[in-house]
Image (cartoon, rainbow, N blue to C red; front, side, top):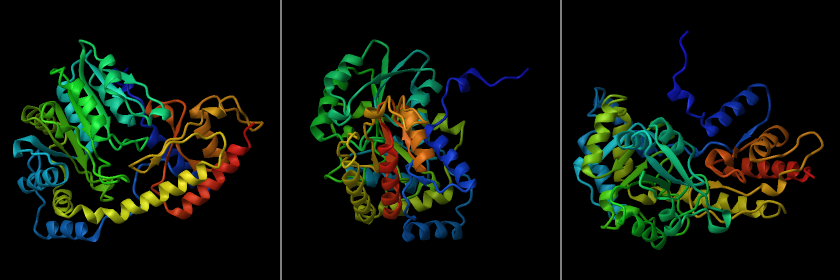
Length: 397
């Protein structure tokens, strides 16, 4: 009898997508669920980007595209890297993909062999660990805490390295915590990387433009580790283009070549029309993203103000992205008389059923003391959701 492959059985379903599916099911039953589980801006793609896509259709950009992307798209990506990050990447170092998720998968599947270790600081984006498992690598998780703003130090990074370590993956600004690495903090990580020439670091910078404290810092800015860093970015978050599916990397040429080979056997080049739209987005002055960034900052402050009023919720101040990641472990062992809270999974499910607010358990991100709450929603929905969450949490004794 045919069976599902061991490869697939090793993977876990995305907790964010699972919660989104559960939310849709409950809404279909007539429940008034407020969804704060997905990391998706509630803004529309800017008109100038949509206009570029329409122009691409009218100009008949409808054939297969080069696997790594149109030449003028790669030129726009190179321009963006230089303008925004001070990074110089040649045309042979850039690959566009169907979303930053595919970009990361390309790199991991191109470089990791069975048994290779990949260091992942926790909390981490849910897919990092699963992609490593898909490649038959071994995820090595470095735990952090809310007291450290969920960031690792160079010392912790060094301690996790073994002769089997081949890669490290991290994000800044971070999903799910919103934490942001400073230039000094990145230098401490670079000091470790430079001592281990066999290690490649994937620096996921998809939330780059949703930064509330100042200039974004890229790990690849340090010349002594430039050849060991793959910079990943995309258009989904800053430009509200989640459905367009356009991500990209800047990488050492040999890694870019490997990713092209991998992608060529999976999806080939990404959507031609999305590429035309991406060129317009990438060439635009980053100031076009400021209105969305400012709206997210206002929502963040609203979230922090209300969550601070709940005695047993512990929070830090996220400096980027659009999530809060509160420590809710003080509720473990409590009950509302019917529903007992043993862990973060229970609390997320309790909030879904009692408060009718969808969040995501922190265990999916490598921290079982927290939950992730997205504030990529309207202020009205956030105010109502926080009111419901407060009422439900106050029932737990």
